[in-house]
Length: 258
Image (cartoon, rainbow, N blue to C red; front, side, top):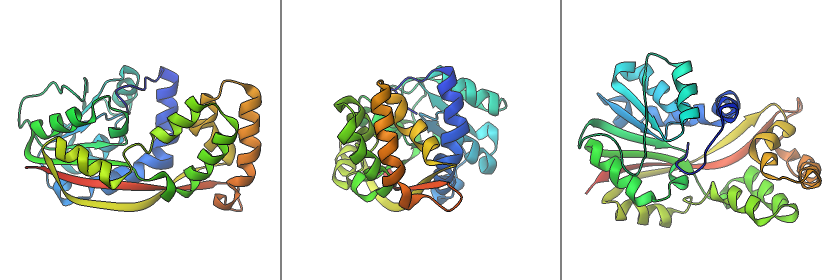
């Protein structure tokens, strides 16, 4: 998931159990359905987390044609447990441990905003892509993500700046201008950028708050205040059965080496 945001073993298991089916599995299918990805002979998934993109790609390309790389051993342990027949590598996205042109296509989902040097990571992805094609999928703009905009507004009223900053950090590369600058600086041109509306789907508001925000707020009174207000503020995104679908904008970008 991230080069700077480390997860424990328990958190990695929870990521696979909650975040993948709630959000990232749908993203992965959309990414892998792209012709550049579906028609590749080999693929590298950078910052693969627990491996949902790599696993989805392997359904088309075969497990021997896909490699997943992440800096977090806990994430990779889950990936290896789920798909022991696939190749999982520990490594730094900003200095990929692969030779030039080693893969037909290189992809990365939900991670660019967390890299310490985003340009270096994109440049490295381009370096190891034989076709020069790099596909990245990231959260879009907070103002176009109704569920998360609501959550951020509540957090701003109750939590400290570190909590608000981390939540805003998910959307740090959501601006089209920022993405244009990053890709250009990495020697990549953006051939296509598609913005679409997804949603984080969980069984209740309480589960949504548990996985998205509340672990970041240390004080119990802060957690309680956020939860109490969010149960009302997020109600428009809750169905009659109590499940939540919190809207979030997503950008899917196809970049190619200049």
